[in-house]
Image 1 (cartoon, rainbow, N blue to C red):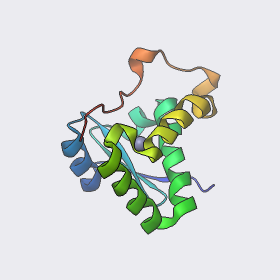
Image 2: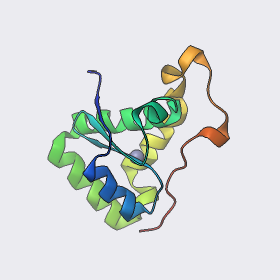
Image 3: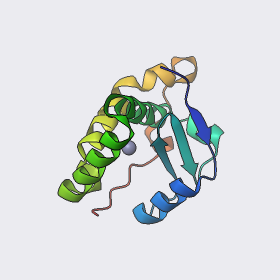
Image 4: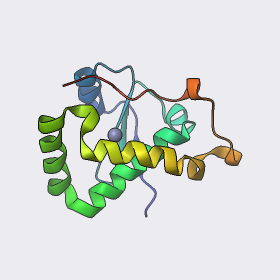
Length: 121
Ligand SMILES: [Zn+2]
């Protein structure tokens, strides 16, 4: 898998951040990770979060741009954000794959992890 591009201060991620009422957001579009409210360094220092977004990149590659976005939006409408099947899978990947992205093989303590937005939308 190609190394993704990281875009800070993304207007797309800012829209998502406002919608989710979250302090910081990362969102995947194609092979790019768009950030708002978080720097590249802060994002990359959170291996659970990186693993979560890498799963979205894999989903994007599997389903294609329109297939991914369509399924994502339908899942949101049907289940609410937290239970979108792509989000459930990405949270599982975040737990499963975090060690792959951990510096020196050490996972940070839970209080340093980025919180998942829990809003019901
Ligand atoms: Zn996600």
